Amino acid sequence: MRVLSGVGLVAVLSLAASLEYYRTTTLTNRTAGDPYAVEIQVQRLREAATILPRDVLVGYVSDVPFEQVRGSAAFFGAQYALAPRILVELPARESTDWVLGNFSKPAEVSAVERRHQLKLARDLGSGVLIFRRIGR
Amino acid sequence: MMAAVAFLVSIATGWLVVDTLLRPVSLRPRWAARVLTIALGAGIGAGATSVLYFLVRSAGLAGRGLLFAADLMLFLAGGAVWLVFRDTARPVESPEKPGFRWNAALAGALTVGFLLVVLAFLSNTEARIHGDWDAWSTWNVRAKFLAADGEEWRNAWSPLLAKTHPDYPLLLPGFVARAWRYGGKETPPAVPAAAAFLFFAGTFAVLVSGFAVLRSTSLGLLAGCILLASTGFLSQGTSQYADVPMGFYILGTVVLLSLTHEAAECRANVLALAGATASLAAWTKNEGLLFLACSVAGICIAQPRSRRVRTTARLLAWFIFGSLPGLLVTLWFKLALAPNVNPLTKQSVFEAMSRLAEADRYFTIARALLSELLMLGDPWTHPLLLLAILAATLRFIPEPERRGYPLVAEVTLALLVAGSAGAYLTTPSRLSISLGRIFAQVWPAAILLVLAALRPPEATTTTT
Image 1: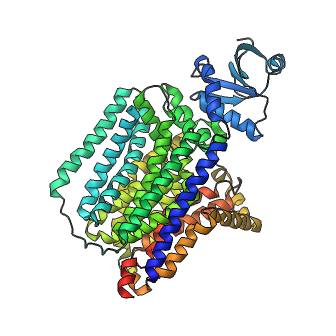
Image 2: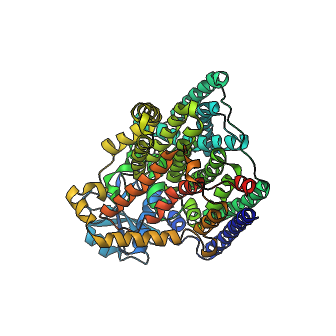
C-alpha cells in the first residue's frame, strides 16, 4: 500500500506539473510570444537581404546602443536575418563598403552620413536604410 | 518536405548502426529495446550526418547532389554492415524483467503528460518560431552560415562573431544546415524547431526505455514522470539551444556505460557506441570535451583493482575507437579552425588559480545553483519532491545488493559536475548566466542515477 500510494502520488503530481506547464506556457505565449520581435526583424530586413551582396562584410549603425538589451537584440536579430553576411558595428577596424542602418525612429540621415563617411543608397522604410561608403 | 527526408536519412542511418551493435545484447523488455534503439539511433544519426556534412563542406563540395551522395554512401555502408551481421549476431538471452501491476496506469499518465508537454512545445514554437535568444543569436545563425552556397559558410567560425561564441562546436548548426541544404536555398525556421523536438523527445525516450532496460519498466516510467515535472528542463527543450542535445548525448553515454554491466559478453559493442555518443557531446558544446575526458576517467576509475590495467586498456580501446569520428573532427575544428575567444582558455594559469582563492565566487555559484535547482520545477510538483517521495516509499537498495552495479556512470557524472564547478570557479565571464543550462545537460542523467539507487516498485511490493 505504501509503495502504491507513493508511486500513484508521483504519477498524479507529474501529470499536474505537465498540465500546469501547458497552461502557463499557452497563457504566456498569448500575451508575450516573441519578446525580441525576431520575426518582425526578419520581415523588415527581407528586402535588404536581396540588395546586400552575400560575400562582403556589412557595417551596422543604429540609434539604439548595443549595450542596451533592445540594441543587442536588434543587432543579433539583423545578423540572423542577413546571414551569411557578417555585420560589424561602426566604427569598425574592418573596411565596409556596404552599411545597414537599423533605426527605431526616423533617422537623421545626414548626421549618420557625415559621422561615418557614408552616402545613403536606399531607404527601405520602417527604419531600414542602406548606405555605401563614400569614395568607392 | 526535403528537410523531412534529411531527418529520416539521419535517423535511419543511426538506427542501422545502433541496431547492429546492440542486437547481440538481447535487451528486455522488447518494447523498451526498440524505443531505445530508435531514440539512440536518431541522436547518433543526427551527429554522424552533422560530422559528414562538415567534412563534405570542408572538402569544398557544396552541391546538393554531392551531399545526397555522401549521405547515401553513409546509409548504404550502415545498411551493408547491418545485413552482414543480421544473421551472424548471436543473441545472448537476458532475463525478462519482473512487472509492476500498475504499469499500464503509469504508462497512461506518462502518455497524457507527454502529450500536454508536446502541445506546450508547439505553442512555444508557434510563438517563437526562431527560438529563444541564443537560438537566433548563436545557434541558428551559424546554421545559416553553414548552409551558405559559397565560401561564406566558413563565416560560422569567423573571429568577427566574437560576441556569439564562434569557437562553439557545430553539431546542431551542422545538422540544421544539412536539412536546409536538402531543401534548396531557403532556410525555413521550422527545421531548427524540428531538430529541437527530435532531441527533446529523444531524451525522454532514452530515459524511459533505457531505464526500463537497465532496471525495470516501472522505474523507467517513473523516470519519465520526474522529467515531465522538471519544467525548467522542458523550457530548455523548446529554446532551440544546444543544451538539450548535449544532455541527450550525456544521457545516452550514461545509459550505455551502465549497459556494459548487463552486456558482459558484448561490452565492446556497447562501449564503442558510448564512445560515439560521448564524442558527439564534444561536437555539440565545449563542455562536451570535458564530458568525454570524464567518461575516459570514469572507465579507468570504476574498474575493480584486481584487473584494472588489462581490463581498462581493453575497454578504453573500444570506447576511444567509437569516439574517433566525432573526436577527430572536434579536435580539428577546435585546434585548426576556431578562434580562441573563450575567456576560460584565454586566461593564464595564474589568473585562473587566483580566482580559486576568491571566496565570494563560491557563494555566488552556490547561490545561483540553488536558485536554478529551485526553478527546475513548480513548488508543489518539484522533481526533487517527487524523487523524495519515491525514496521514502521505495527505499534505497542496501549496499551489498548494489555491488556489481556499474560505478562507471556515477563516477563519470560526478567528475563532470566537479569539472564544471572548476570551470565556473575559474571563468572570468559572468557566473550566473549559463548555470541553468548545466541542469538541462546533466538533469536527465542525474534522474537516472538517483532512481538507480532505489528498489523497483515490484520488488518492494513482493518483499513487504
